[in-house]
Structures are given as C-alpha cells and as structure tokens.
Image (tube, rainbow, N blue to C red):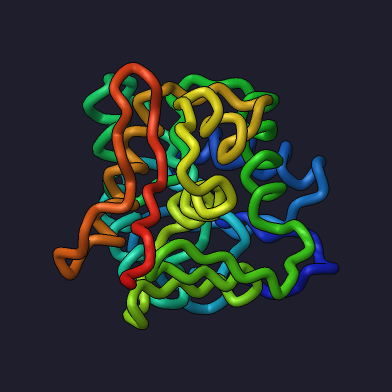
Length: 238
C-alpha cells in the first residue's frame, strides 16, 4: 500500500493492448485515480517495487511474464502481499477463473467489460481496504488478528494472508460459531454492489484454510453442508 491515505488512490494498469490501456487510463483518471502503466509482467513487478500501488489491474495474457505468474510473485513478496489484484482476461471459463483466484487474485473480470462495471469493482475493493483503521484486536482460540497492523498469528506463529482472506477471517472472528452462508459472506467481504459467483467464496475459504493450517493445526473452519461455513473455536483446556 502506498500509505498516502489523503492522496488519490494509485492504480497500476498492466495491459499490453494499447487501445484498452488508453481507455482504462482515461476512465480511471476521470474518476480521480492516479494511474501508472506497465506493458508486460516484468515491468509490472518493477513498478510495484518502485511505488506500491493501492490496487493492480492485471491482464492474464502478458509478454515476458504471464499475469498469473506476476500474481503469484506479488503474493510471495512482503511488500506486495496485501495489494488487491483484479485480473482482466478474455478467459471466461470457470476453471480459468478459479486458477486466477488460486494464484492470489481478489477479483476477476472477463473481457469485454464495460468501464462502469470495472469502476464499480474497483470502488468496492478500495472501500474494503481503505476504511479508517482502529487498534481493534480480534481473537478466536489461538488465532489473534490486529486489524490496525494487518497482522495475524496462530499460536504465536505469523500467518500471511491476502487481503480477501484477511477480510474473510475478520468476519469469521467477528461472528464465532455462527454459520455464515455464501451469500452472507459475499455481501460482507465483497460487497452488495459487485457480482461475484458463490464458487469464489469456496476458493478463498480453501486458501484461508491452507494459510491457517500450514503447521497441521486443527481446522477451525467447519463446512456446513447446504448452509455455509462457521468458525469453530475450541473451548479452553481446563
């Protein structure tokens, strides 16, 4: 994150199609965003290193380094781990969408798309990540989340989460034991004004489980058939 809460949000647009790049820049700047451009995957990684943006629009099909690989590398880097990524792609099949989400993307929009739809998704993502932060600390069992510092630990071990998984866990910790449907999670984590398929929830739940259980800890997230998911906090040991 750029850390300039009073500045216009910076969007890095990574796209090698000149006409689409120009259209995106025009619409983003008209909406008040600052825009940085990258025409291939390697340039995108360099630009993020120079000035981490508030959000990245990332084309799937890029020269030198694919958008999918760029996404993976950004998620492995401490500087860029929490930057939201919206993937732009002509690939509209469900399997491709899941691959993009599994690589670390927070949202996915298939070409062709309207500028209005893209801007709505950008606004929704930025609303989720830029609210005034407090020193709120949430906990459940051996999981502790500091909302202000974006730090999550389990049993004292630091857990690295992407922005969507962080918001999912925050919602679970705010409603321990409660069964939350996919629709409820979509509204709370993605927002009511953005269309996201229910399958997307399952992908991010899987990623959250993988991060929380990396040391073979008991799975805290319970799948409730035909109902949704719940965070099960074990009772304290007597």
